[in-house]
Amino acid sequence: MARFGIVTFPGSNCDHDAYHAVKHVLGEDATFVWHQDTDLSALDVVVLPGGFSYGDYLRSGAIARFSPVMDAVVDFANAGGLVLGVCNGFQVLCEAGLLPGTLTRNHSLRFVCKPTAVRIERIDTPFTAQYAPGQVLSLPVAHGEGRYVADDATLDALESNNQVLFRYTDADGRATDAANPNGSMRNIAGICNEARNVLGLMPHPERHVELLLGSDDGRPLFESLRASVNDAMLTSAA
Image: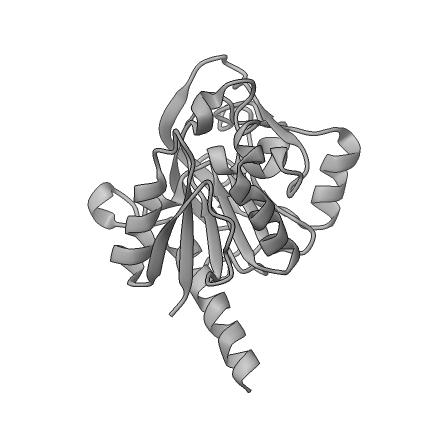
């Protein structure tokens, strides 16, 4: 059984959503990790959830990056552990230097909350292996600072290294300006690190894991993580 740890910062508000997705929908082991905890050794996957950590003062994620747990998250990621940052969690990962670039105010300067079409760009990762190449998902966004920004050299490197895993599109999979909810450069919705074990994603997969809520397009992301952990366990036991 995969062991998921969901970090809770002061101001997190999607930690219970992530817990529900893992524990009650997938039936995997899930536990909350308080922001002052520093021992992640019992975990296979660490989730940094959405919300408004520390009230989003200074910049989104800027204070959470200095929480005691984040040193442990950095060490966990550098050792090859799987780390998922959703929305505010994506912002924290960028602030912590685990992912390049930054998230800034939406182009509209307004909070955006709606279902959004997102295209799968790569399936050769622990986060996307259960999807189909080019599959278009319906995932909700809910953020005021979700515009992904980086310099051209960083953007080119992300593209050439196949680190862009999710891209905003229309329902037909076309990456247009009209389909971009926040003005993210190159319609980027989610990226991974070079080692492909850290993912930052602005849309909320944990909110679309049950058809009762209109879509379960986020469920394969968590199923991909479970499969990756199980495969690693079988490999280590062989």
